Length: 185
DNA sequence: CCCTGATTCGC
DNA sequence: GCGAATCAGG
Image (tube, rainbow, N blue to C red; front, side, top):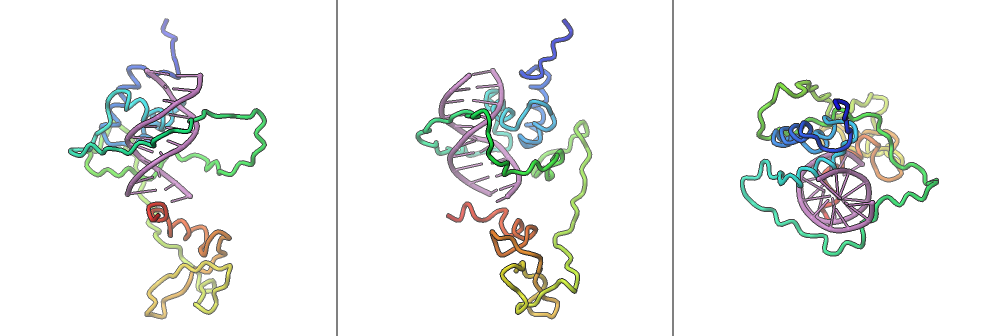
């Protein structure tokens, strides 16, 4: 009976890992990635709540989450058989290493992957001088992301081909948002 | 846009 | 019990 490897289903072993990592402060997605196969971040969160866990770094506050009121009906995947809909999302290959955990107040555990790679540190793109644009050189299709100090001659615009969806290029549009937009109702 | 956890609800 | 879908916030 040794062979009872239920890939799905929470074994004690997995639960322990889950609890450990959760208490360590790792995010649900990271834990899911660690557990690997068949485990999504939702599964992790769901299990965490089921285990009465959660509240790892919450000294106070019960956070009275506002309920979504009335759920119209969370329909499961309707999958109409042959979904010809175009794939709008990119596979993004493998994101095995998400951006480093916040690690606000947790002790590093050597037992876990101690492999942390330092960020690229490239906070900005380097624009070759021949690609830099002055204010007057901007057009509808050039990235209008300002670089440098406007008070010095070391100021110019990105100048890359901008997206149709915004005034910036792909790189800078992501930098422009990332935290804004949604809360700014 | 990316991400986080929280919640609901069909299975 | 499980987890996808969805919500709400950062």
